[in-house]
Length: 338
Ligand code: NDP
Image (cartoon, rainbow, N blue to C red; front, side, top):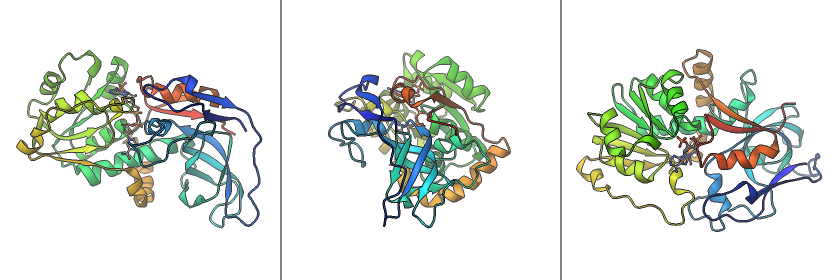
């Protein structure tokens, strides 16, 4: 059972060397008297929140810190290979929390979601049909509450959540602009995902001026993924009664001290509602979401781009690549396709 372990707790930017791929024995049978399942992991999802779990004191997250020497955990797509649980049978495909390893014993499989559309590419359940897709769906409709004709901005726009939320906002009839960290991603946003405009934030000297250029009338909805200087510039460009759906702040995850925001006063002047949310509060919507999103994909109303790293050995590099913007689209790791 090859697995990825955390070697030590991380301060600052994580490096590949903070993790190691090691071999060990696999447990392929469920313990007698349990209601456990054993999963064979097919695809692992690289998610920015995992960085919080690599710190010793995980103050910025609700999930506990990883333990050095132990296997990393994250969302994945897996096949049930042994089951003592009445709801799961051998051969079922599931998505949910699993280990960064070949086989994982799950003592409480109720947390897993069954894959109801195995005709779709299974890897999609790490992204557009899994946790990031549900994040985009719930964050947009329940928190941002868009209306036709509104001006919508999303940062980290070509990533897992960004590409989906931007396309859903377009389907609602919003004017959609995204920011991303390379010209290649900007092109993708405009040509493949159908955004109205997109820009490379790394090339902009003055983010406030860039936003004024793309939103001369201001922003109704900001779908926040990065925090820091981008959020500060957005605050100056919000319209009256605008909404900021705070999904993530990736520019802050490797900082020991959060970077200061100067322009919060805009919230008062423009009567802006700024609201954070966690996808875990919306798991009740996952079946409705899955049906709707499968329909959009089959009708080509939503297109999806993933960045696939082949093999567990590539997993550490793939994970830390999220913090340098190495990924183009949703970053995932293939463990095996069998
Ligand atoms: P992405 O696929 O978007 O990957 C992360 C991207 O963030 C990178 O590709 C990079 O894109 C960008 N980035 C990295 N470092 C910085 C930086 N310092 N400044 C600006 N941009 C940076 O990730 P996800 O779509 O999975 O996640 C997006 C956000 O949503 C994250 O903040 C994440 O924590 C959050 N999230 C929140 C959830 C919730 O329940 N609230 C659930 C899921 C995700 P670029 O090249 O454009 O710089």
